[in-house]
Length: 398
Ligand code: PLP
Image 1 (cartoon, helix red, strand yellow):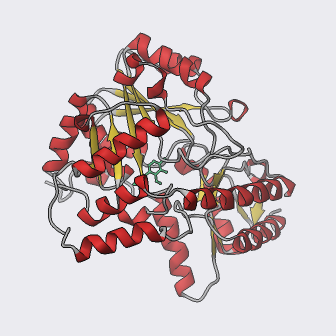
Image 2 (cartoon, protein in one colour; image 1 turned 90 degrees about the vertical axis):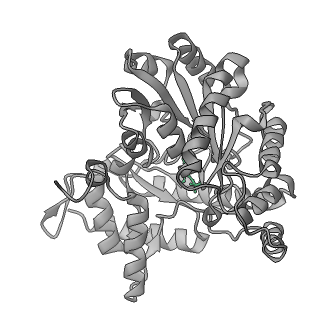
């Protein structure tokens, strides 16, 4: 009998966290590494949110809450969904968890069984396939095309479906590509999902980080029928620079939310009481700090895309949302450094870390080996220096 479960043996650690850890270790050795690895805003949590949390501690709001979140926070989420997305939910249709990642995990545990298939458009957020597998279901990876802005089309979806298909994951705006779905795109996906009775998992965590007036649409808002088949995964981490506070939420059909609540009540119990208070303030308080962050991200996006496209051999799609770029570096594959050939995104990322001292995340981790993911949630100064280093390092490839 082996010590570890099969589940644990086959699970890889999160690659984005691993790259950040390596970059941090190099920094600790005195090497000046520029990191484009972060999946979190470089801004501080807004003051008003922090103050509410401090008050919560001082007032002794430091005990267990209801496992699925306080009514106060559920009501703030309900109001947010009504205000921003014209969606009406009841408290019994909302679950607050320890971050969007935990929301997705609970959902996968509640919804999927062995033998069922879940369609995951690639490039995908690194954690979807492992979390589907942890629920013993099978991720079915569907490659999207850059000419379709990396979005899955209704035709792609139909071709990937089998009688075992249980759900499709839509992440808009997307990590890692920064593309986002229009109302028209979503209408077509919804039509297919409804005709085949599958669920749509709509990861909307980057909802507020959109540029040039790109309108956000939740697929759940397209009609009562698709709303009944959609589970929204969301959270405060990205919008409010609250990655460390660990508050995510799910909105969806009561039966699914109730099952998720049971799972949560037997595993983590409630998300941190203090963070829940802070999240209420995030939703109900002033929103101007969000606008400021988005406008800073926009300035960096414009710079980084132009600069990347000016480097020989790189082509970069201009994202409409989130804070990542996903440039194609594949024209460098087949070249060598000190006699060592680079053929994959992971080798190129290792080369960039060793030679340019720049941390990026290889595209293979997102299911797209031609690319690298760079987060621009870092200062303009670091972005400029990092891109200079990348350009210089690439010249060394023969
Ligand atoms: N969904 C996507 C697409 C993400 O990129 C992330 C974080 O990187 C999450 C969900 C989860 O965020 P958190 O667990 O910090 O709320």
